[in-house]
Structure formats: structure tokens, C-alpha cells
Length: 419
Image (cartoon, rainbow, N blue to C red; front, side, top):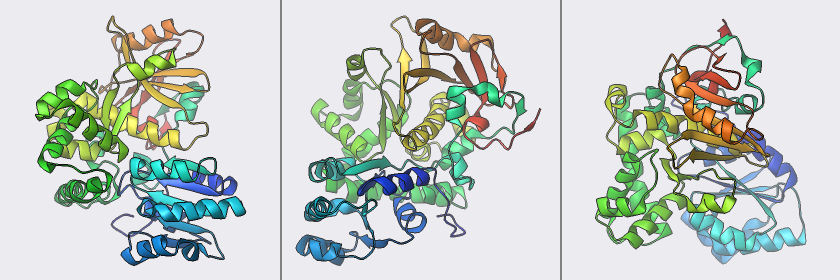
């Protein structure tokens, strides 16, 4: 919801509607304050009864009288369902007695707290979707993510378009957590993000696991932000944070469980190797990453050695939001060889590979395509073309296999006009 109290459509809404038309239980998860309650209650709420277990009295009823709480003539939406394990068992019993599509929409802010219990109680009965932070298009009222499906299948369909460029640094600072992304000014955004971190540390995190020293955890959180986009080395991160490796490992798992951390796996033909190779590290929200890294203005980002990684994080956020809208969901990975060849992202969709390189330049050059060419040479049968995302205004072929794509177009905020 924005400052004018308008409800903004989310790109995940159509996928959730489809899931509710097929499955008896749909589970909507994501980081706190991504807009799950607004999506579940305002956008998907027509014809549904809404119950929030954030209400202490309602949570108590859910534990003491779960079957009574579930008695309803209309489908139920239950917010923060992880607060009542007993209610999940009651939902399981009800679904087993009578399977009705869209019977229950459940939301929660923690993968560890929610899915660990839901997977036991609702195995084979539920569809799971994750609400990512708002995309640039969603913030602008477009209710979408970028046209990645077209870019993966046939970018030539967009040839000849000239688009309005965007200030990606402002987009990065805004991020996608609605209260910060739609804030009236920088001070409001920074104050909200500061409160968000404190609330996460003091409330949500303690629900997941006991944290002995919050100061240590916050230091690791800041180190994570400063390493946005880099290869994940838990030993180095533990050393820099002054933590024992097992403790740092547990804290990083908690960040991932609460959807604040994204580990981007490495692409390899052998899927087992993807699990072994070091992932790249990103925070789910660029606004939070910039805040934790002490970057509060566009000029600070431009002068920072993090600029390229933050731009990649902007693109990754849109890719992950797009991924959640599809079934089966594409994989988003990165590629790097021992010889140093690399591409920022690899989209794997139904056997097709699309390498994506992101450059903070308005005039992409052939020298920028080295990693893309190396990938296309390595996987000629699976990868038909590569994408070079740049900050300029023109979509054009760089070669017979590589397309230069303006960032604004890739993020669905182009405002395109004919060239």
C-alpha cells in the first residue's frame, strides 16, 4: 500500500489466483513487510474470510479450539499461520475429509518456522509461493515484472524500440519493501528501515531461534550487505564478524530462512555440483542492502565499489519475482569457470539456457560480451542467445547471438517509444 493508501497490484496475484483455483491449500510466504497481508486480504480477499494470528486472542483460539476457528461458510485466509502448529493439523484433517479448491490461503514470514511444520502437516495438499519485494513496475503501479519470458524466447520481437532510461541507483535505494519503497522522502525511508532491522532482530529472529548476542548478529548482517553479489565464503565472513564458524553458519541460515538472504547457485550441467560450488550472496531487498551498507544517496552508490553488484541485485530482484509467477519455475543461477570466464546470471527454463550480463554503461561495447560468448560457445545446443543488460536506451543486436537490452525495458518500466 502506498502513501496515497491505494492498493498496488502485484505480479504474483494471477499465479496465486490460478493456484487457488486448483489446490485446497495455498501457502504464501516471504520476508516480513513484502506486502503479503495486503495481497492476501485486499487483492485476493473477495469472497474469503480473513483471520490473523498476529492477534493474540485469535492465536490462542487457534491453539485451543482449532476446529471451531476453521468453521466457515466461505474460504479462509489465515495470516501468520506458523504461530499455531495445532491449527495446521486441523487444516490437514479438514482437507482430508473434503478437498475443495481454494479452501485455505495461509501466509507466513518465515521459511523455517512455516515450511518445517507445513511440509509435515500438508504434504501433497499445498502449493507454495513466495512474495518477493516489489518490482520497479509494481512500484510504478504496473503490477508486473520485466518481460523476461519474451527476452528468453525471442528478444528480436522488441527490436527497434527506444526506451526512456531510468536512474537505477534511486530504484536500488528505494528497494521493494512497500513502506520504504513508497516513502515520501529519504528520511522517512531510512527511519523505517532502521526500525525494520530492529524489529527483525528483536522480534522475528527470536521466534526462529535463540540468538545469544544480537550485536554479533547485526554485525554479520551488515557484513552480508557489504558482500552483496560476491561469492559466499562463510569462513571469511565468520572471521570478519568475530564469530565461530558454526555460529556464523547458523546465523546465515536464519537470514535465508527469513527470506532476507538469497544464495544464488552456480550453474553446472551436473546438478550435484551446483550444491557444492560456492553460491553468490545477495540480500533480497536492495533498499535494505544499501541501508545496511551505509549507502543513503545515489552519489554514494556511484562512488562505491559496490555499485556494479547493487545494479545486479536490482536485476536479480526482478528475475526472482518473475520466477515465482511461473509453474514450473525457472532456475536463476550464475556461471564462472576456473579460467575466470563468467556471466552474472543464467536463466534455466525447461532445458533452455539464457546467459545474462549486467553492465552499468549506456553504451555497451563488444568487449562487454566476453563472458556471454564464452558461455554460448560452451553450451551451443542449450543456449540460443545471450542478453547484455545496460543502462542506455536502445535495444539492438551486438552480434548474431547477443542482444543489448536497456535496463528499463528489462525491468518493465521502459515507457517505450518508436526509435
